[in-house]
Length: 82
Image 1 (cartoon, rainbow, N blue to C red):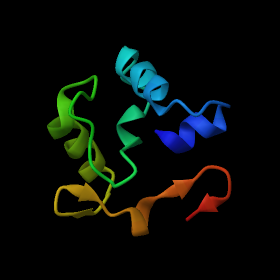
Image 2 (cartoon, one colour):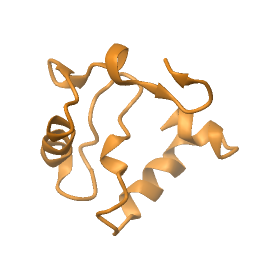
Image 3 (cartoon, rainbow, N blue to C red):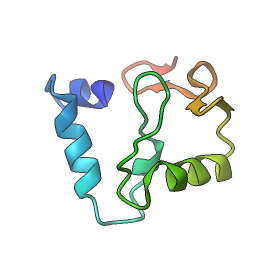
Image 4 (tube, rainbow, N blue to C red):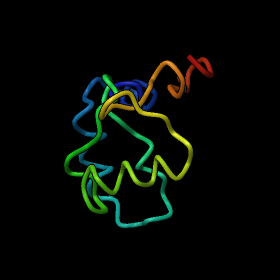
């Protein structure tokens, strides 16, 4: 959330979270946005963290415990892959 906030010119990552939660379009890949530590959003707009995880797993995203493996999957939109 923080990286996206910085990219759009704010420091308020909560605004990003609110915008993603308010999204009603299932075609927007907001399930790909996770917390800085790789954990999932309990209030993911389309069914909570369980549904978010299902979508990520279907895309081949790997997890370490219940968190996305950020070493493998983090993309820094400012600079490309981490």
